[in-house]
Image (cartoon, rainbow, N blue to C red; front, side, top):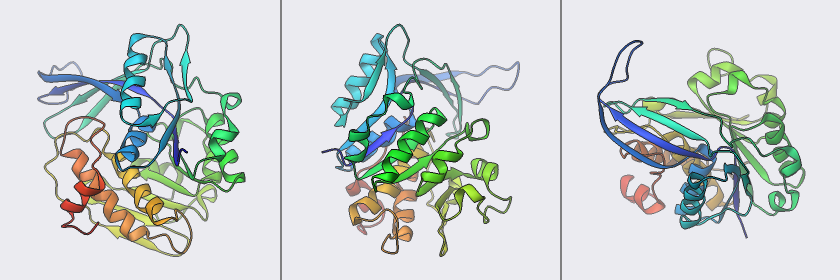
Length: 302
């Protein structure tokens, strides 16, 4: 049985390691390049599978050779792809990630086959059979249908809407979500400028705000918890946010409570920051650590 379903973007990443991010009308030297699977929904699914959760993925790829590479990589990682839609006559979404020596990332991409999953494609039986649903950027109406289906069945929901939050109306999906992940820029789109007063659509939700190198915070209806993060030799921040989200959920899911008074958000936050730091110390979008890796990093605490 699938324990966690992730839903959203499934990409093919082409990563270019450069000496510096180019300025307008500028030029950068490419020091290395690589190709691999990516996309936040796929990254979190792979990360949780590596932490020994049974994971499934709702998303879409093209019927091209790249789509077959993506599907094979996910399957090899232990992710159930029975609900990964293959779109005829469309190419799999490709993202070009330009990474500088400091680990900062610039992203270019085509739409490709992403977001082909419509509300009509949502399989209620698949969604309601899981213990948890994690949403990432996708069609707002599909995100809303997935979240509604899960919530009405008593399945907990988390949502990491991503960098396009300001352009899209995710209000309904946010209203059904129990946990919402945001970075500082995304938070200012829907929270007051001090990042402490939730808008009405986040009232009563657990809001996790990622501050990058400065750590992260969790705001619940009862309390606010901060963690300063960890020093890391940053190589590539691609996928670090996905590793963070996977780590946060992994602790709560392993303890049996994503929401409610028994959920240990302080412990989950420390673990998530460790996951993000470890991921940023390696190249690629799918570098999320295992429980054992994080335990060693935190001197055996986990």
